[in-house]
Image 1 (cartoon, rainbow, N blue to C red):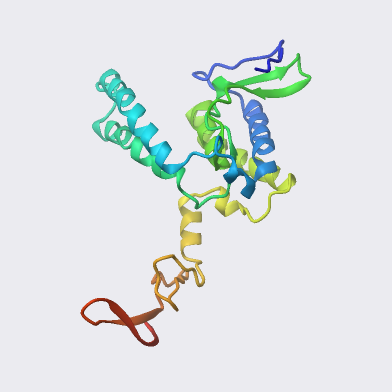
Image 2 (cartoon, one colour):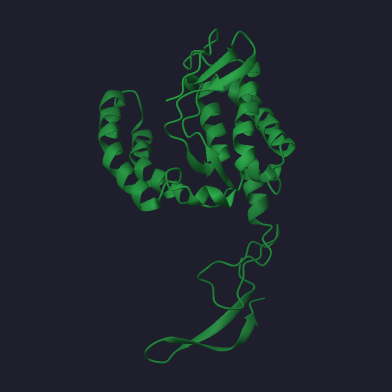
Length: 247
């Protein structure tokens, strides 16, 4: 075990939330953590670091349900039924998210919140230190940032400034060498999601037939422009002829 004396330092109450200045420091620290191992294939070979789907699923489904039951008992009178139902879906969603590859993966703290942050380390020698590394794993860096912003700022202030904070995080990633991660991917608003979903060109998925791909346009949401005819011969399906235009 390695210990370091970080005193004197400044702590901020997570229930009260931090200032915008502190939030900016956290965004810079997040980028410093995420950028060096961004999309590094070597991370997948570190078994102690990578959450294997089967192992993660078993752990989540074993440990979370009792916690969720206690949460429901405590807050049943304070939360609407639809929100309690959402919490009950957490084990399934968490296990599924661990196997998701739709976002770039990197070294992830996985418990990146205000309670695990100290400011003005050594009387200001360093702007910040991050504690509690027992959940470190491989995953989307943006999850650390989203987790912090969701609980580290007053909600009204967060809504007003979260886009600027995310832009700063994205700019810091770029400054530190991250490439092929544009702003639309980082800031996945409904508008950006629609823009990306309507700008697909020749995308292929594993279960697609040969010669078939997905393409969309802002004024044409139909994903398949080409079809294949298959004939069932009594035991299996056999492709017949060349791809046909669906226009």
